[in-house]
Amino acid sequence: MDRESTSSAQELLQIGTIHHSYLSDRLKIAIGSQLNDRTQDPEHPDRTRFNCVSQPPYLNYYLDITLMGKPTGFIEYLREVEAEISPVERIHNWDEFHLPLPDQTLRNQSARCMDCGTPFCHTGNMVAGMASGCPIGNLIPEWNDLVYRGLWREALDRLHKTNNFPEFTGRVCPAPCEGSCVLGIHKSPVTIKSIEHSIVDKGWEEGWIVPQPPAKRTGKKIAIVGSGPAGLCAAAQLNQAGHWVTVLERADRPGGLLMYGIPNMKLEKEQVVLRRIELLEAEGITFTCNVEVGKDLTTADLLKDYDAVVLCTGATKPRDLPIAGRELTGIHFAMDFLTANTQAVLDGKENSNFISAAGKDVIIIGGGDTGTDCVGTSIRHNCNSVEQLEIMPTPPLKRSADNPWPEWPKVYKMDYGQEEAAAKFGHDPRAYLTTATKFEGDENGNVTAVHTVQVQWEKNEQGQFALKHVPGTEKVNPAQLVLLAMGFLGPEQPLLTALGIECNNRSNIQAEHEKYTTNIPGVFAAGDCRRGQSLVVWAFNEGRGVARECDLYLMGSTDLP
Image: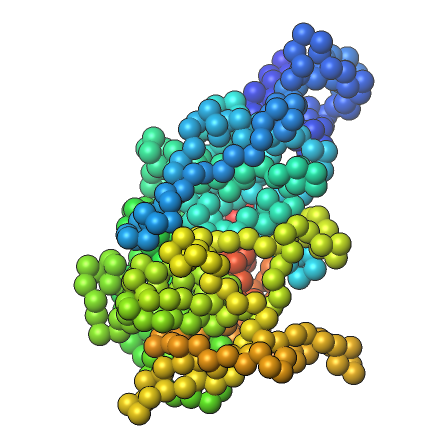
């Protein structure tokens, strides 16, 4: 082997450790060798020696390869998660409440990453209809190892290779990566989510994250409609490819779901969301707010003024509950409640759209993340009481037999909103296997109560599970504010109709995954408007994917991942 090839091999190994299965292939490619006779170095337990037979010139030599992380870390260290400001304290403000872990603790937690032969944490597959592993393929074992070794900047580089905005996912992602962690088969999984946002937070603190505008421009102009997570990822990637990118947002601030769909105490707006958007602006992306395509900008001008258009409008059409009394005042969609609240927090004053829960009995219909955000927000308004109706049964305390690893674990847990309700009112606010049957109001048309009944799921003649009311469980619950948090039915249709975009039978934009092309040449779609309501991390996956396909369409080839 010549001196240059040997040097390249040494440099490859010094970059940072790589998973053994991946490392072998990388070495074969880099130095044209076969790896044989793997043996442990007795003097250095974390190093492995390989006898490498190069071809040609058929010379034998040895390479010392550092093992990933600490081989016994998962035995020596227990899982530790970030401490939180107590619920009774944090409900009096809108600040984030997670307390950072010390660096040494994070290094110990990274050491728990066990050098498993086939990691599942970064696979991003759909298993039993749920995400298993990271949908954007985060190189989790690699940056865990780098954190363990104290190489924080290198860890940040590895994290940014697959994730444009880890400070967002590190805060709001439910972490399907942890659900599929191999260590989780028999112990508590690695604290991947905490390590992720600790890496990026340190990057901001140390000044490592700075604007990186592209070296040259292609002259192509792209409009991205919608500035939520998919739109931001698409904008970041296409801008790095050298295109001129304009992001059109109908709200008064960019960020979409990240800005107005998630409360400030869960994802801080000015210090986290707007900080990243300002960096994107410094890299050359233009954000134009208060512009609704189809009204403030015609669809004809949109198609004429830009070389390509990417639709990332989200799935913002809420599911309604058309039962008796729905017309009463005081019944609102959850997103209207959350959006107006965040606007008030950021503006320092309430506007005409503000919906107050102060002093009211609040009933939230829907048991998902949005419902939880409504619980936490209502408590900070100082509501009189809060109850959350959940139509599904109480989950088990541990995985059931039909929910094996590496599926997402469907187990009972209390999120931050439920913890706060329990601290203030003494119990989990969720009423499982319960549905609303009627809204009751007063003579002035204001809602005063919600009639509920317990339900059970039974198989019908077709073998499908159907909902059945349980006689004798009817109840009347006082309520002066009702929030509907039952999910979303797809994208709003007026813009799609005006553009002539074809939709599927679920009302989502018809565009194949990994291709993202609509029926109109040069118009692409990604995120929830294409796949339906989903996780922020899936929006990142689609935003990066649509950028690649859009770049390929414009340039004939692409270097985007």
